[in-house]
Structure formats: structure tokens, C-alpha cells
Length: 237
Image 1 (cartoon, rainbow, N blue to C red):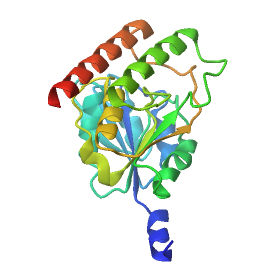
Image 2: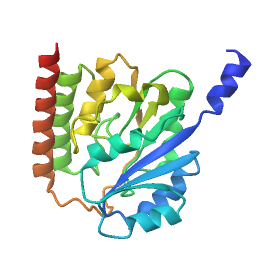
Image 3: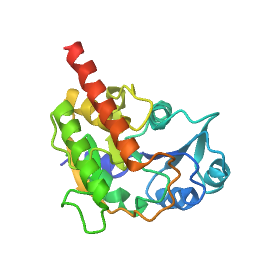
Image 4: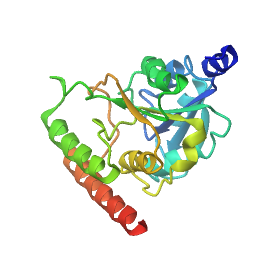
């Protein structure tokens, strides 16, 4: 490989996006750790009622603040509108469930020009013994539905820990305002013939969770949105 090209890939400009809703317990640490591996961190405070914004800014993040809770899809849409000029865009949840120290593993395939979309998978090597049973069943159903819609074989369709090649961000349409966005982005990537790769990540399930929805309600809602997205894509053909 040409030495100049190699150096450009090593020095790629990276931004980490963190959508957050009432995540004051963990957001500061997530921001600080993410800044060790990125040029910038952008937190989207999606209408939090706690001190998420202040803690994020004090930790070194830039901030986008919504006046009310619009949903994760809207947060990502607004954040992606701010990432022009970055070579790699990373998304990570703000609740401490993901480990920012794994960002180098996530972005490596893009730096090596082996992928355009890297999905951090909690289940690439199967479910571990600490995965709650309800998550195993629900995740399997959502993965199957996503893979049918997208024509892919991903093992963790609902992962919020991902990396994107900066030049491909216009491929994502952000139609779904909520958590259905995770599956929608996979389908958008596949529809645009982007190279999708998964890498294994770790996960903590014992973090504070600000979600007011139960896992069953949440899963059914996402499944409905995946089915709706499939119908939309079918009518476009």
C-alpha cells in the first residue's frame, strides 16, 4: 500500500455520537473514555429531565439539546447532520452498557478499508450465560425480521455501538423516530450495497436504565416498525 495512503488512514478524523435520555449516572464516564479514541464527542440530549447535558459538557462533549424527548432516530438524524468532514462516525449508547475502550476494534475494519458499516455485536459468538432469557428470545425475533428486510445476516440488529465510514452517511434516511432506527440503518446500508461487517463487543446488563418501557413492549414496538419499514421498501421497488 502507498505510504501516504496508509498514513491518511491512520490519521482519520473520528467523531463519537452519544444519544442520551436521562443518563446522568453514566454519561460523564462514557464521554471521557470516548474522547481517548476520537477527535470529538457529540452528545444529543433528547429532552432529559436530569443533569445529562451539564455532565456531558463538563466531560468535554459538544452538545445538541432537544426541548423534549423525540426518540433515538431523531437524535441520530440530528447528530448525523453535524458530522461533515469526519472520516469515521461512531455511535455508542450513553448508559454505560457499552465499553468505549472497544472503539479501536470497531473502527479498525474501516481504517483497513474492509467495511463501510461496522456493527458491534453482543452475540457474534452466541449468547453468553449472563444474557437474560427474555433478551435471547426477543433479540432472535428482531434479528430474523431485520435480516429478512435487509437481506443480511447480522447477529445483533439492535446494537447501538456502531461505526460508519464518513463518506457513506448520506445513505441513511432516518425515517423511524425511535428505536426502530437500528434495523432501518442496516437495511439502508444493505440497500446501498455498503460493506457490512460485525465485530464482537462486550456488554453490561446491570447498568441503570432510564427506559420506561418494559422489554416485551419495547420488542413488539420495534418488530412493528421493522415490518412497516419492509412494506415501505417493497412499495418503492
